[in-house]
Image 1 (cartoon, rainbow, N blue to C red):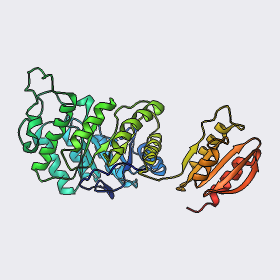
Image 2 (image 1 turned 180 degrees about the horizontal axis):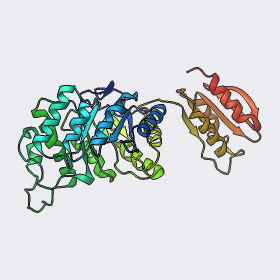
Image 3 (image 1 turned 90 degrees about the horizontal axis):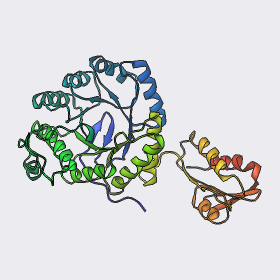
Image 4 (image 1 turned 180 degrees about the vertical axis):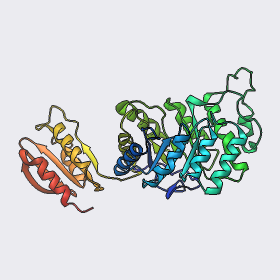
Amino acid sequence: MTYNKRRVTKPVYVGGVKVGGGADVTVQSMTKTDTRDVKATVRQIHELEEAGCEIIRSAVPDMEAAQAMAEIKKQIHIPLIADIHFHYQLALECAAGGVDCLRLNPGNLRNEDQVREVVQSAKQRNIPIRIGVNFGSLPPVGGIGRTRGFSRHMDLVNRLPKAGEAQSGDYSVVDHMVATALWEISLLEQQDFDQIKISMKAFDVPTTVEAYRRLGEMVPYPLHLGITEAGTVQSGSIRTAVGLGVLLYEGIGDTIRVSLSGDSVEEVTAGYEILKSLNLRDKGTTLVACPSCGRADVDVVKLANDVDALLKRSDKKIKVAVMGCEVNGPGEAKDADVGIAAGAGRAIIFRKGEKVRVVPEAEMLTALMEEIENTPV
């Protein structure tokens, strides 16, 4: 079984990477170094490239960081996005320096003339813009334009309370997130600019899901999915998998970032695991592993973890099953490209559903890895 039919979107090219328009859902991350430290930032990006990161974003807090982006761009091999807040001049500097995309926050970059200047710079250089709406930095109610360019979505925008008015009872934070995105979309469209990606992030999963669903029905642009400030590697990966899993299964989403308080490589790993679980990407090996129980005659947990550690070094696109008893073991092992069904003192190795050999417990790991290496992709 696969996911629902993908939402149809306009394609956008971030450097040489196609986002939307039927392309594979891409996995991206964000550097956690001081962008002004070019050496450290490039080193981290190289680590992320090796992990499979396809697009990288870096924070640009000041002009020194903006100027560093040009040198960073020269030394990496994947598209570079400049993350811009508050100061439009930083976006102009990054565009001139050759970045592949600009992320603008409509919550803190609201001067329409300044946004237009950035759009013109991006248009001249054929650089896409991601409109990055975030629950934590929404503009104040009444703080964005009300009528200009909103003809297609006037019903929603006209529900925005005017500055100083109390928020109406039926006007939700999702309404405000969607209206904020539409405001900036309108500014870009007014300048005949359609190289647009959009994100609608919140920590709360239901809020995030509803915001993406709503906006996805209204505009044709690709969506960058994420749960903002999701948490630590364990809890944040789970929260993100729940939120993004719902949307991706519904066919919503063209590129993803898993935002974790941890090593950025963990973000990339989690991103691919989410996509693999929905059959959206098949990077690397898929491991099916028995959780173990009282029926297990071998230490299947240790075996599974040992196999997992070794498989991280492999880019083979195969399914491997590590099972520990006679209940589900043979069936799952036979369904995998390579599988092992362990029992008392011995294990059966399967390849493509066929029994290959029986090995003693002491040789299980070695025998399984040999079969994986010898299995054609």
